[in-house]
Image (cartoon, rainbow over all chains, first blue to last red; front, top):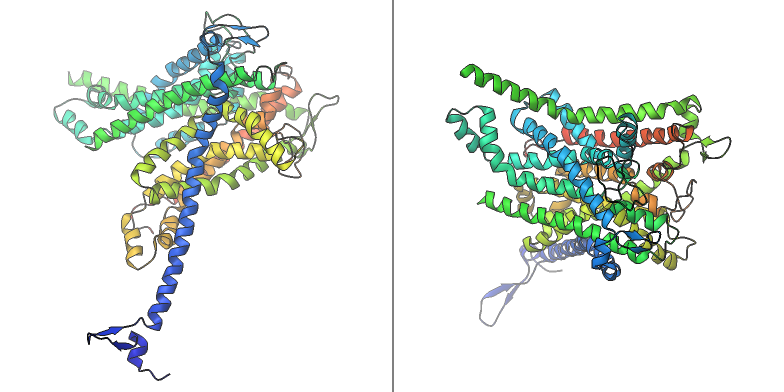
Length: 319
Length: 297
């Protein structure tokens, strides 16, 4: 073709009616544009996939909650929440389970909170980087990763048998306390880290000792964060099933616990037993859904409070 | 006065230090009691017969204590769950860190976080009463309680772990790297693939391993949904019995300090060692390849 080198690179010049020269797109520019359009298309397709993946993960929770509410709603009556089970657990309520679960999770937090907060204070305020710190952190991470059924075995061997507590509220609460310890430590550390160093420096500068600074300045400032962590710890303990199977929960006991060495009923174990081991698995399905609904309301409610509270705290600190 | 203050200081530090070692103590006690109650089984069967024996008939006479099918079931369910959870979890993390508007992210993020809070027994129950009949109809199976169902439920339990840790890793990639790539003419996707993901790969790897560790140790879901058959699975729709399910289901019937009881504790040791291994690998990756600023890239 009869084109100049300049025309090939820059595109042919066309005279327009106004007399101003306008260049058409060159071959190279067209190729670049086509390639760019291709790259943009790849991007659009892939980003759509990412959006779909996120939608699936977000919807998963809603779908599960939807089915529990839809099928469990009709089971929730005043009697269901306030009566004991009757007729081999095919009728009546789940009061002993609710009381048992609340007792277990508060017992667990009573044990885990002081140990967890003190551990976090050591890690964040006292510890210097080094081998000991590394070992403590590794232990906490590993403790968080121990399977819940292994905690159950440990609770059985140590609390139930070795310390002779028997299958009891105390043994279950201690086992759950060990499980929620890493949760509490993590949340407390985050809360302590969010306290600005200027607070500590001001207090130390006024002549306070380290402990006085921690006790009077750092802890009060971190308190809301610590409370958020405890709520998360309680909710974790309330939902666990495997650790209490061998240590605390029983199939059926009509009495509410009167001492910490009593066996108890608990919501998660009740769901498991009714759904898999009962003689009336299909007949008690509404009761199973109802119990599941009560449990997720309890657990998700606590988590929602903690998440909203934490969001507010973060915004306040960022101001 | 100064002396007294000093003493208090020293005492408090000592107290906090000793409490902080509680986690080490608990971990140690868990190992101690697992071994104390689990090791006696090896007087009856050899370690290799226990680990690689193909038959688990703990109640027959003479009893067979081979946990090979249980180990394979655990590994298979975890692998299948990871195959579902890793793409979904990492893609969600990328979406949250890079693509989502603030408003959407503020809705999706709590939803994924709350998924982690859902009690495992509820997820197991959901798999049993909703997903199992559905699978049975759609794929025309003899039972909906099988490896695939369990893996699906486990995937949704490990997604929150994978997503939140990956998101942190992606989020902490220095903006300068991203801007540099975009300024050179790369599209957002190319920047993501060639710059952001390689820079955050150690965080994502940690996330994946912790997610797998959660899946292999999860009990209620596999107990209620996996089907419970002690066999080496031939297809993803076969019922299986992973280690945690076996422990949870049989402990109540096992005679106290009998062979079966010891064997279940020994299974607990194997399970514990698996998760310990996962966690140590995750910890090593997180420490060795920790990204500190742009300089180390």
